[in-house]
Amino acid sequence: MKLDTVFAPTSLADVPALARAADEIGFAGLWTAETSHDPYLPLALAAEHSERLDLGTSIAVAFPRSPLVHAQIAWDLAAQSRGRFILGLGTQVKGHNERRFGIAWEAPGPRLRELILCIRAIWDCWQNGAKPRFEGTHYRFTLMTPFFNPGPIAHPRIPIWIAGVNTYMLELAGELCEGFHVHPFHSLRYLREALLPEVERGLARGGRTRSDIVLATSAFVIAGDTDEEIARAKEAVRLQLAFYASTRTYARVLATHGWGDTSARLNEKAAKGDWAGMANEITDAMLDVYAVTARWDEVAARVRARYEGLLDRVALYLPFRPGDDAERWRRIVRAFA
Image (cartoon, rainbow, N blue to C red; front, side, top):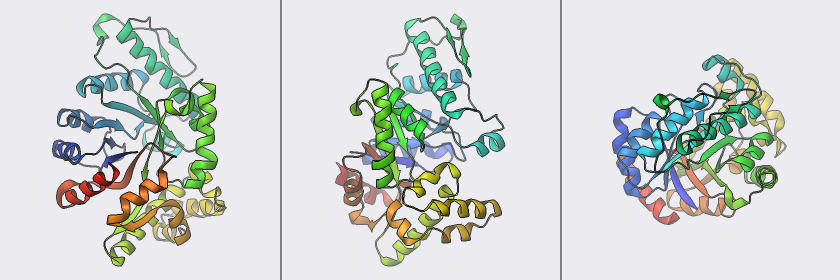
């Protein structure tokens, strides 16, 4: 099992030092997210200032950008990183697409499927000279002139990963994708009873096997060196879980354990901005199901034991800031290795 890390939202000026530190400490990969900053830009710098790390988006929001925009950025990052770039895409949810990005929300599953196929058709055109003739319901690629064609690169086999929670996305990942970002809000029961069987159905549909897809996640960790530190960490994780669980898209993760009614209550409180009330809905029993609680020197062993045989890569749902924590991260990386 590989241990990755996640960039905290930060300025571009900080990226070179963070990338060098992550590379030196020994993480297998480094992921950016589309939150308060663009997910692609930091990876151009990370590619320049690292030698070994896999570099990927977890995730870039799919629909605000056209297939060609995703394809072009990924092509350049694959070349810049000498084949270390992973294109991770996700749909986000309806409210964010319509109200934050200002775009229409329609048929997200089939639309993401087409986006993936169109991106690959564009890459095939650039690398192999294939004619641009992709025509779908949502996307069309039928024109490429020499002036706009970047041409072949040394590492054209760019892995496409997607993220999601529900059946269509899990089956789509199994059928078409090289990897899948398992949402941090998950449980072992959800993985075993829902996610893995649905990914397997997609693999069968695509004539593929489990070895053809990488499953990865960021694990919620409640850690500290003292009981007081663990108690503080517990409240931060409680609030983050409440935030995720308030989105109806993720209701099945709660429903798997018979907590489906909690999702509706959280949604109501989120609409009112009652963040404290939301956190109170996440019980200690839920924390035990959705997070790993341990002293820092036990974290690596607990996380490995939790996911062994289920997932292939894991990061801790904690931002990587080398600074004073560098030696702690080194110990965790060594424990995984």
